[in-house]
Amino acid sequence: MRLCVSALKNDLRVNLLCALSGGLVVFLLFCGGCATLPATRPLAELQQQQAVVLFREAMVRQQECACCLDAQVRLSLKSVLQNGTISGFVQAKAPAFLKFTGLNPLGQPMMILVADGTFFRYVAVPEGKGYDGLVTAAAFKKYAPQGFDPAHGFYWLAGRLAPEKLRIFSAAQDQEGQGLWLELAYATESLGGKALRRHVLFDPARQVIRRHLVADPDGRIMVDVHYDDYVQVPEGGSGNCRLPGLIKIHANHNGALMELTLADWLPDASFSAEDFRVDLPLGFQLVPVE
Image (cartoon, rainbow, N blue to C red; front, side, top):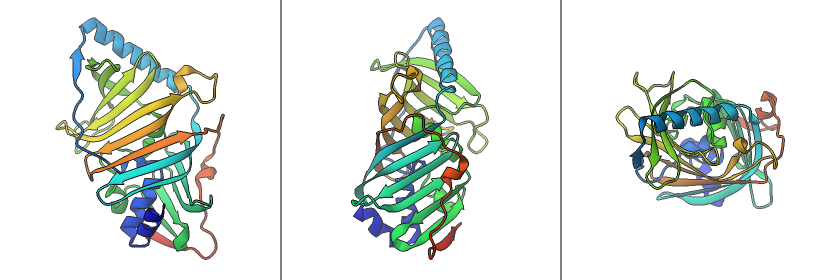
């Protein structure tokens, strides 16, 4: 906590880094190691077809799951430059509304980050400042690796895929028996005119995504997200609507490891767009970010 707050006082860029490391959009801002494409075992053509049908059916059922979540979160960051942990709570609403409130040891707000897929606002309470900008701003994109679309922020946090048309290219068995790997892409997604490829590890028994990689057109991994400790929220609900209790983030851009541990979900969370609006307190300075 103190490490992040101290860094916030240095300059705007570090300020944004700590801010984003506090939120969910956050969770694609850091990385560790150089992820590689998964090792797989081929499936017979009929088995591939069955795997694709099973996966598509699961994704369709997930569209019936709750569109909001509210949970406590502990975020840990380890890198060559800094290490630290901050706790708080996170709220999200599909498709892109996110809000993170980081707390000090006394339970008082230290930072607030809100985003709606287009704009973000970060409030640094100790500084008495608020930073506003587009998610396409250079300062934001400097820390958000390619492959992460802020317009899908909720789905990254929930361990799901956005309900958009998918092109599925292949299906294979995980070499370690952890499920099925599907290579796919959103029909409208590209990078420099070429299609991005996603590699998703799907657990057919639990009907959840265990890993989600995004590769550039040359096959280099840009983002690698691991999901674990799925729980049912609320208890007794649909088994297809579990939420991940542990999210580990890797991306090949600055050599760090981030973990988000979520717990104490509020059952039946429901939000409107207004819930993700944060007005600056009287006397705070507003700083536009480009």
